[in-house]
Length: 185
Image (cartoon, one colour):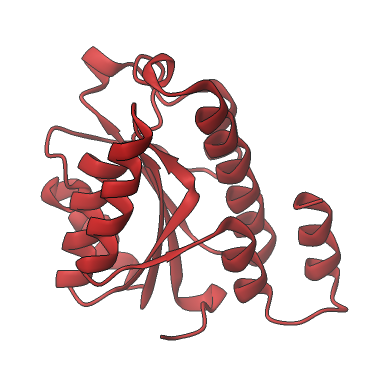
């Protein structure tokens, strides 16, 4: 397993959308949003590129406001898709290929469908894939757990928000470390 390095890592936000959000358990959804925002800010601080997807936005709506606002700040426009696997969308696959990351960190909804299928495909395409357990959810906790298990069995590393943030920052004492430490308090 490689250390996450800002220069060759990509953060992917999968389908955190307005009409899907109310179906999620409230506490798990709140944790997903908070941790996704931590990772997006970590990405901003360290210069990690970000991509985002939206599953059939006509039906499921746009990305939820707090995350959409952060994506706008980062200059990231979500890519519409119909495939559950984000890589199945040609526009997404082309953008991913153009960025040429070695590692991809995945957050989003739902763990057992779009997150799993995206992670599985990322692994098959040769990317070191990290699924952030405390930044993914499903409508039911058992489906979230199954999704995480499937991601791991497909070859992804199941990890946590703080693990990703501090792996990317690598060492204490820097301004980036100080800023990221404040995010996770």
